[in-house]
Length: 606
Image (tube, rainbow, N blue to C red; front, side):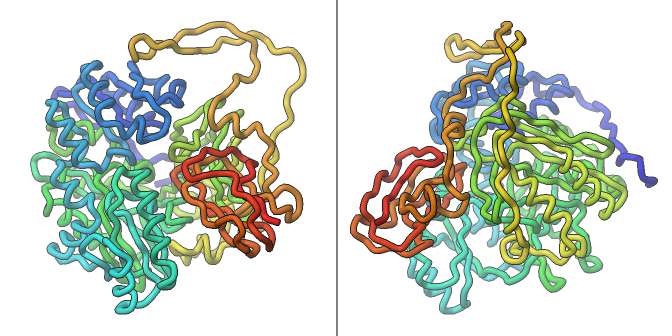
């Protein structure tokens, strides 16, 4: 295909009348926006749900209707089954799209939706049970003949089980959340001494993000690539694999950059992975979109897990095929057959795609610290072959209570070198102010010779990539002069249903709540693992807003420089806040469960 041409868009004729008329999206942020737009193009009405903090969120503004769930945290809102079921009842929605995260891989939630006579836009609950649970999915892979990474095929219930496994198979090992993905709850254990703390931390993160805390253990491979296969199945027993994706550029076991197709695999591997993915899906009666993940090392691949939902990185498969995967989800959920055969799907693949996740994190010094707050300016990249999927606009708040994905830059080009160059150009044009983002780290990854040569692995960012020169971005200077009148929108709620109201007001910054207020407080932290006012003052500060989940020291205890004193959860990630000097703990100013702001002193050391 000559440069300057996009991969062709697939025209899908409406051979059957669309059964679904109104879809409730049981999610927020970028994925809720993505589903709303796809549904609107199909002429389907959409219903948003929102927490108290998301009252003015983009997905709420775009939907045809919106209903309040109440609460601030995910547990109080997006993981509140009764509140969501109530919104379904009141809105009259005939289908629910779960997005990713939250309830997307919760079989009980799917059953509750189906029990109301409402279509669940996802796989059958039985498939979620078997494949959504990473332990039983390993058993299913074994039944299907796929090789798996050595690990447990039962849930871990005690530290002794891990110690026994470690003695037999050696260290390092990795704990994983059985009901989830995205690296949430993943903890690498390098010695027996780390086992107990890793179990506790993994369970806390898994429970906070997925509502379940079951875990299992695997051997931790030394230099693997993460390669996955996008599949879609219908209710008539047909399954196709759409593309492979390489997701090896990760930090904290969470993906930063994804590519399609997976580049530089040994001959025959891609097709073998696709066939294995289809067999795994058919073995559990799978329909709708899903992803089978593999670990690839030394020209061999091992089944890792299956994500029984739409993936964050699905757009990078879309741009090389022209297939709208969300449209396919909606159509097959309504009973339509797959619109293309495997041969037709394979013939659609063109060029190379790259997706970059723009997360609200500060990568300065390679720390990737969460950076919640008010987005004071957001300018998306543009140009040929560039797409931006976002959940936020200028003036929106990235809350500490939810995932920190601001948006995704997706690029298509005729080949991989062109795609890399185009992605760097797009990222250099993008502007995000008010919160720090991962863009500087993304550019460093894309510019590195190891990435160009496909020599990176899932551990490369943290073990090889030098991000020590990256600095915390400086906030822009405020503009002078009187503010003109501008048209703004606000909302009112009547019995929990949201209505938008427009008015003309002075163009001045809107007072934000929650995480936005925290950004106005000067953070005196250096941006490292722990903060301190001045040089080694002994006043240990937190570098971002969050919740204290654990105190690691007691008054009178002697601590060393760099020793963790508290565990802070921000944006569903746990961060150990460290002492800045040698000394004795004089005062602990917080308790587990306390919410703190950027720059707050949590421990005093003398």
